[in-house]
Image 1 (cartoon, rainbow, N blue to C red):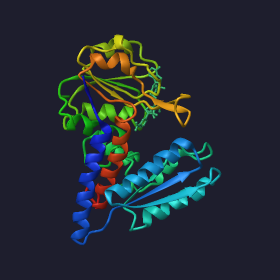
Image 2: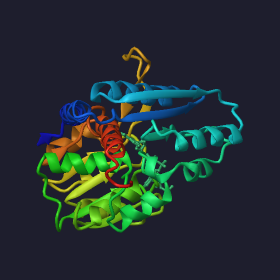
Image 3: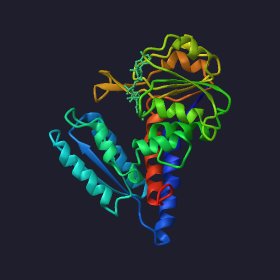
Image 4: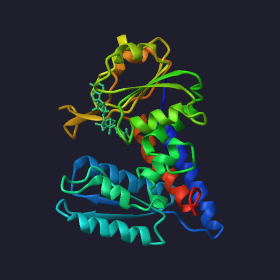
Length: 292
Ligand code: NAP
């Protein structure tokens, strides 16, 4: 079994990005600029945004953090989105999700200029991704594809099961694994109403678990030699940790890992690659790689 080290891979890619940024700036080009909007004080979101700002520094990007209180009216948030759309110094920006209940998330996503949508959530980017056109690809699935490639894991013609069908992970992941230029695999998507989930997993060469159910994938669901990608990050109480919780994956690591050819740990697997892919998208935005 080989552990897929997302932390080390992400660090290496961020170094490569920083090197490219240095060259761009040395040649008189513009330093890429990522802005992030954070609404409220949710612990998870605070951590994600903080890590994104740190990653920007590592990559040599300019970053701007815009904070609003939980009760910000939707109209005010939309006005900020419009301002960022029109700000020529900002190459890309994100609105950290989830948003408070009184704000229509989809409306906010739709308001973002797709040419600056480095999260890849706007329907134009989702649509372009699904027909294989250049675009911003959602960071977690892009990070997983990058990991599989960097570890030379063969995906073409393999049976891949994606657990979960969310808009930000499961659906785009299944799309990418299916597409010729990315996974080129035969893909099955399972969700909470799938009747043959266990049987499907047992036949899979690659399982990508993104359901948010700690230890859901057990050894009896996994074929010998399978590749396992664990996207799940659920906070579970743990008195031995300083913060009082630990991050638990969707895979029962101890019993599943001996059966695998490759497996991602939690933490240190998919998580660091997600932020790294956001950085890649920001670099692409700065270079106007997909849209003029
Ligand atoms: P989500 O929006 O809650 O979607 C969960 C999906 O899992 C849904 O499609 C749901 O099915 C399915 N599901 C739930 N329980 C199931 C069960 N018992 N059997 C089969 N399918 C089940 O979650 P998400 O945003 O995609 O995130 C999934 C997990 O990945 C979470 O733990 C999240 O924290 C983590 N995550 C990690 C990263 C990272 O960078 N590491 C990034 C994003 C998300 P239905 O559609 O039928 O409800």
